[in-house]
Length: 249
Image (cartoon, rainbow, N blue to C red; front, side, top):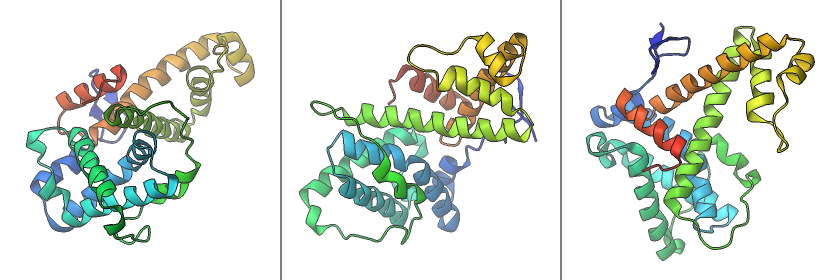
């Protein structure tokens, strides 16, 4: 089934699912638990990096705290903690993380340490230690750190979805041209269309068309990713605008 994207064009991506956030306000039991687990799996990286960079936690402490924070939310049930009618999930989660971090520092020794995966499987945490946290003088604003890392996570997921889609459609060269020019361009600047055409065996005209279509497809993929954590198209628009402006709330 195709859906209409924000620009009114038919989309080849799966229907946008507002369900994970919406379920929290309407369901209970296993349905709410699964929705919670999916949401938390998507947010582990911004949570972990915020703990490391904004609050200066060590690798191991940040991993333990990420696991503990998410496990607590899963045990208690986000359906009982988060009210979708009172605001956006991202804003609520930032406030909840701040409260947890302060509580954890006050009473670090009292926290019960759990083995990863006991209640919540977070495969991503296995790679947490390999995430580079650039050195920075002073302390970052935790909210800004979280929003920046969430924007990166949205882009990473959207790019992965775009790659899967284009390769499945036999358009791998479209994806490679896009990555070479728009995503992984060196600091000296992206390769020109002629260089891309020669390296990919395409015409300059085709390179231009491929880049244009890939950019549109990425915007669509971003809207689908964000749509999984919003309740309406209006909220998606707000989220995307804030991601682009770097001024999340």
